[in-house]
Amino acid sequence: MSITDTTLAEAEILLAQPRGFCAGVDRAIEIVERAIKLHGSPIYVRHEIVHNAYVVEDLRKKGAIFIEQLEEVPAGNTVIFSAHGVSKAVRAEAESRGLRVYDATCPLVTKVHIEVAKMRADGFDIVMIGHKGHPEVEGTMGQTGEGMHLVEDIEDVQALALPDPERIAFVTQTTLSVDDAAEIIAALKAKYPAIREPKKQDICYATQNRQDAVKFMAPQCDVVIVVGSPNSSNSNRLREVAEKRGIPSYMVDSPTQIDPAWIEGKRRIGVTAGASAPEALAQAVIARLHELGVRNVRALEGIEENIAFPLPRGLGLPA
Image (tube, rainbow, N blue to C red; front, side, top):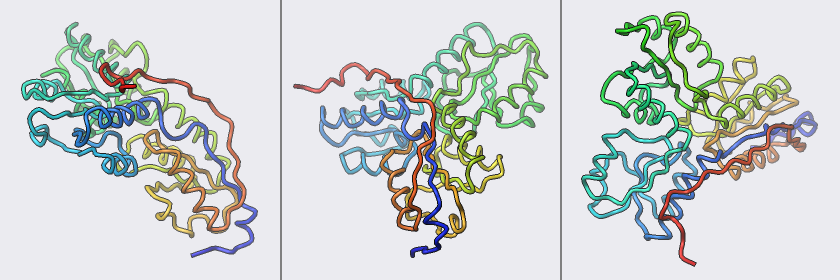
């Protein structure tokens, strides 16, 4: 279907900056690709390496097998832990089974795991702000056997009954809405004035930057399209950030999911991509908008990211 409305020929695509892959996602994907080249396929990956269907399918074609339980990995094989991190129990199981392990946990998630270990060693109960069932939350909650309490909203904060109000700390999932997390943190501080907070906020730089970019872009737009998979926390937050500013917002996993009605009569169409969505997919969405009649594209100003994380030892490729 093609829209020939002349207003679309005058419409403009605004591109958020930054958008797409962050350093942790780049690193995780490279770990899988290098492991396949080094050891051959198959390489087993516990959970989706990052939450993006396009990325997962591409790696599957290259020889990755995605599993949820370590028992699915044959003895003596290689397993990669996803960027979201895993619990101590999962690490212990992999070691007991003698599996070769490459850890693709984002270093910023690892930072939260280290914080949890230190806080528990100091005798603090820890409140984690996050989404129940998300693999990052399960991995962080699994860094200690007890003393962890999950809250998803202010109502959960009000329901908390912790043993010692003077020995409480909090951490957060790295991909939360900055604004939503701030409200929950404020509620925690109101209820527990002595609560200890992380030395640096746990919400990662990439999540913050992409949300800030949408806050800048959305008021200039009539509609916002977010490139990202439904199970991607950071992509969902980008859609919510735009919606909270009164802008109709949609998330797509593929350019084929764009409904031409979304852009009919619109003058400015914002496009961004979650930290787990490849730029190739964002460009495919732009190409689809071109097909529908939108001609002009303008990249907005924003932060240029130049962060890179080192790979795990043992993944150097032979010359």
